[in-house]
Image 1: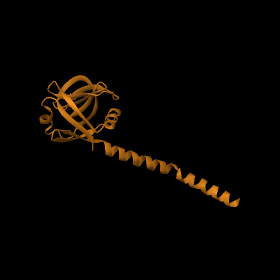
Image 2: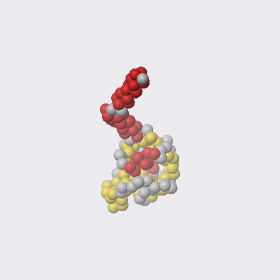
Image 3: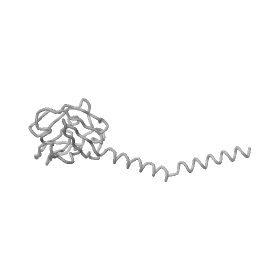
Length: 154
């Protein structure tokens, strides 16, 4: 009986140490750090041109990242943007577009992905997903009609 009591007491002590708050916090923090650094960058391929984009930290960008890798045919609109309508919706938190910059990646409504290749001011509402880091060559890659665009996690 003494042996069983000793084994049970040992198991309880092991269980208490294994579930201490310090271990849980350290594990959670290391997981959060990995997910933030692994998923904030994205590779965009348009023909032979390759760009890197930084995604915003919001629910829309998170939902978009979950769809990657993604290859889509984006259509031309207004000689300043390419767009694509998803068959599903993404969470949206739209605000006035204001000053659109070359390389902005946004969501119009809750299912229209937009990649801008010209800058301008607008009163339309968009949810910001992110932006292309270095836009050199983006205008040339996007300015001719519909294009096939591949989005990948980096």
